[in-house]
Length: 279
Image: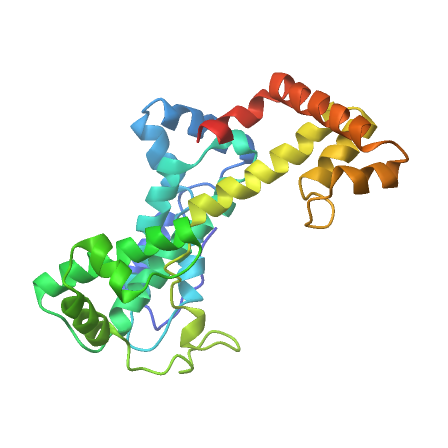
């Protein structure tokens, strides 16, 4: 596959496009084979996985172009996300690598754009403190499902409260979040990163949910239905034993006994769920 010539690209970028076009796209079977080798420390396999997906980075980087930022810079940052994806990809989840990698590529590019969009530069030590604060906010958001207060940031990072306030003020972006970009029907807000964004966690959760649903089919129909009602698989609500009994025409005690039996079966037979429990 060759990229079409674009006069807006400099010679070095054209050369880069020609170079990465030499690498063949992978089939899912090839991705699985490489991922197994990567898990065993095979460096050649890791490089092949990365090189075969460099064109994906270019494609995504093009959609995030904004004025004042070169496409090559975006590609370089996206490549860092691709490298991280190659290290973390779990072939056992039955998901294409490009689907998984796209999340990491997006994270790397949007974080880079956020940093570049700040017009006020901080001294080195304050930049280090800001990175520490941002890391804390990211982890706190994942654990508590909300943003921390300034006091919580100060206590969690051991940075003085007044310093937290000043660093957060100076690091804020004075550019309107609704500034136009060349993304179709988009604005700057659409490309800024979310500090609570956790692609690996999201991927893990989606796989856990899918594997759990698949495991339910190892149960008898009445067992499966009871588990689905009891654990929010039907309408997002956890139903009571009484409610389920009324739906199925049996007593609440019978529902409870069937639930216990079904959970025991899942524990014994659905071995693929142990990875999530251990994780």
